Length: 216
Image (tube, rainbow, N blue to C red; front, side, top):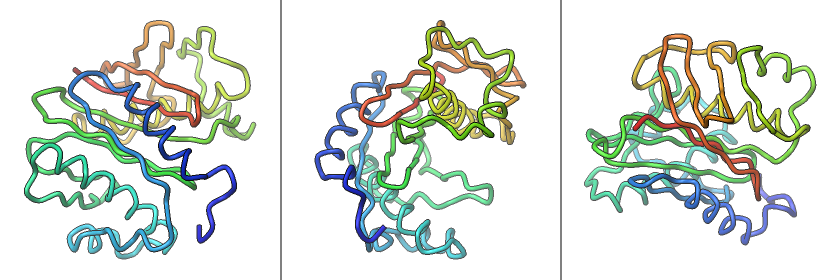
C-alpha cells in the first residue's frame, strides 16, 4: 500500500468519484479517495478505539474510508462526523444519517444521506476482474436472475451487488446473511433477502465495479 499500483493513478480517483455520483439516486451523496500511506491518521478517537485490533493495512483503508465519510457528513451538517465500527464490522452512523463505506486494495468509497431521504443504503467497490472460480459457485444461486450480465466480470458484479445488499439490509434487520440468502434480479433492478426484505440495486463496471443497494 506504500506505493499504489500503476492503475491507481490520481485520475482514477476522479473517475470513480464521477461514476459513483452518476450511480446515486436523489438524496444520496457520495465520495471516493485513493488509499494512501498514513491515512489511518484520519481515524477519529472513537473510530480508532473501535478498530484498535485491526492490522495496519486495514486501519489505513479504514482511515481513507472514514475521511470520505467525514466529508459527506460535513456536507450534511453533522457536528460530530465520527463513524465507529460496530461489533459485527458495521459502521455506526450519527443519529439521523444512513450510509455505507467500502474499499478495495486501492480506493475507498462512501455514501450517506439523511434518514428522511431513504431507509438504508449499501455500497461496494471491486476490481473489474472475474471472481476466482472457486467463489463463483458460492456467490451465484439458482434464484438469481442474471439477465444479460457479462460473462467474466459478471461474477464479480453479482458478488459486489450482494455485498451492497447485505450492508443495506443489516441496519434494518440485524441479520447476518450469506450469498444464498440474497436473490438478485438484474432485469428488474431489485434484490430480496431470505427474510423478505426488498431492495433496489444498480451497478457500473467502469472504471471499477461499483454496486449500490438501497431501500427508499
